[in-house]
Image 1: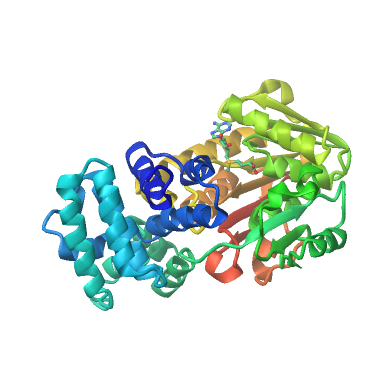
Image 2: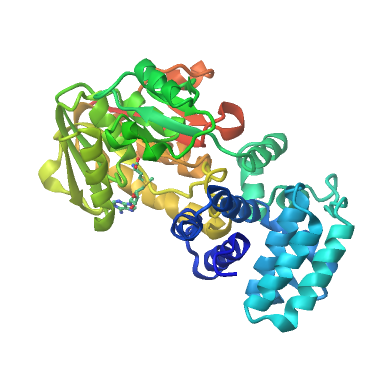
Amino acid sequence: MKNNARKIAIEILELIENEKAYSNIEINKKVKLLEDIREQNFVRELVYGVLENKLYIDNIISQFSNTKINKIDNIILQILRTGVYQIYFMKNIPESAVCNEAVKIAKNKNKKRLSGFVNGILRNISRNKNKEFLPDKSTKLVDYLSIKYSHPKWMVKHFIDDYNEDFTEKLLSFNNEKPPLIIRVNRLKIDRESLMNKFMDYNIKTERTKYSKDGLVVHKPKNITGLEEFKKGFFTIQDESSQLVAQIMNPKEGSNVIDVCSAPGGKSTHIAELMNNKGSILSRDIFEHKLNLIEQNSKRLGIDIINTENFDALKFDKKIQDSMDYCLVDAPCSGLGLLRRKPDIRWNKSKEDIEDLSNIQLNILEIASKYLKKGGILIYSTCTISKKENIEVVNKFLKNNINYKLEKIDNLYFEDKSKLEEGHITLLPNIHGTDGFFIAKIKRIR
Ligand SMILES: C[S@@+](CC[C@H](N)C(=O)[O-])C[C@H]1O[C@@H](n2cnc3c(N)ncnc32)[C@H](O)[C@@H]1O
């Protein structure tokens, strides 16, 4: 069983749990061991399926195991989780095959002693697979939502506090759906309609995005980064909500722009495209190695107005004070708007992170604002829907800085017109169908 898809998925899950490895990086590394594309997709489905349904799956295992979940040997636990996922969510796989394969993997992993435990539990679960074992919804709502949709309890409470119970249930359910693939058309090289036609030549159907003027939804994507059009820089993979940041900034050709947290360059390169590659963009990040990604992306997209620099946004840089027409703070954040694309975030963030991050965000915003000229535009964005990291940061900033005010957003279609008037929008996954995002447009008035 050298390159067995189930075994590879189990090894990836073990690395994610024990070493906090990133699912997308580990999957991309390990699926290369499998030649068959269907086998590769099976690994993806198992890893993401288990990560998205971990609490639900563990709750089932705990009904049949005398050993507590946190006392079960880690490899055995991953074998059980992938087994339960297949039994409950992949109904076309025969359950006997699921149990037999799980036992074989346990033996192969030198856990022969525990293979009987695996066999007993999975066979028992398979006999009872129509039961859900959920807490009572009316008396234990947070526990119910946490287990049913597999989000940690603190996160469920956090969403209920920020929004409400009904919204939270819809959001959690949406976070377990498969996200679509969205791309951004590079206007420097091609227009949206022409790129749609090129995709048609490959029999790939695309559709214009609802909010972004540069976006396309790609239906049934097949290895699109292998296409000549990608290599030639005709498009970038980027969610629709993230595309709205540069769109709302709406920078003029020839401007001076700074992006203080810019890697891997998704928004810096979009800003350059909107500026018709004329002007100057200073793209900074605290991680030197990530700056290479911005350079690679710029080269592919035909952009030469971006200069990268390794610089800590928490440090003030006097020499560029009052010099920028536009400034972007795409701040480090909890990522709670990305739970559909990155289920690992559910398990590696804590409530305390939100408090810590909101302090960092405010500090970065305060410092970055000093780089703007009078009349300049400051965009603050995050990929979270947590109010503490979003509007509350902006309000604190405005309270301390009377020379800045929120500015009306006048170049975007958005259902809630009052938010456009106020100068900030929040994209909510279950309402707008995008990743969760917050974008505020602030102007330096004095
Ligand atoms: C949300 S990501 C930026 C994504 C990027 N704007 C894009 O569109 O591709 C936040 C970035 O902030 C960087 N970062 C975190 N702390 C920082 C700091 N103190 N100074 C500068 N960059 C920082 C991270 O390395 C990360 O690349």
